[in-house]
Image (cartoon, rainbow, N blue to C red; front, side, top):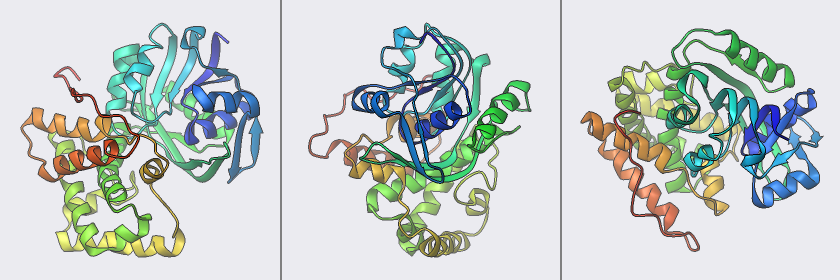
Length: 339
């Protein structure tokens, strides 16, 4: 296949959910995947269970050179290796591209390859888990907002969001996508830190007073980085009420997190962050393109983020100290002035 309406880079949980729904709706879809996962999808198709029960055959492209044109490129792989993966797609004529990865560096990486005019911002308030059987458990379908990085509502954002939404994965075009991306990122950094260091189900560290204290401090440091770049944060765009955690007295913010933890204990006692799933599954953690980006950007701005920096090194150490994991390269992520 040298042309597809939707090309999805990454056949993990969310990429598979999107691919299966779009293919079922009659759109031409190609999955860019490699290794065992590519072979499994070629053999068995995309198999989704949970909120829906789907089994859909979808073409798989393992050799990036085979692809020439993509009307919409969706980046759904984990962040490690994204820059190299996108470089292999530099020859592809892309109409629009967006990433639903964690963090905010994703938009810059896309713009370097395809040009900023082709890039939309996006995030996924959608959850799933790739099971050892190769099936994907679809557990959460709230919204996949996307929009123009410059702000405002565009026809192309409306068209793509409408197509995804009609296929069955809830999606909307929004005017403030950068604010929403940063709001999610600010909260994600804190949640990921607690998830990986405690190795606990989510409600436990949210309900714990000491963990909630650390989480509030991490969110406030990351929020200061967003505000230093002129990004206003948005309540309701993240798993935690980010502006309340920033603006209220610290003890009030801590109690908000603990109440959310107790609520999760009742509603979702087994919920685990995807980062913990990766850790327990022996997969690389998302470190450099997320924590590394934030810490290096703060250094460029002369903004002290001591707790965030400490967790950056701690999470990185947890990642590469596991048995069987290759030692990290000496050169860490470099964020240039142009990004």
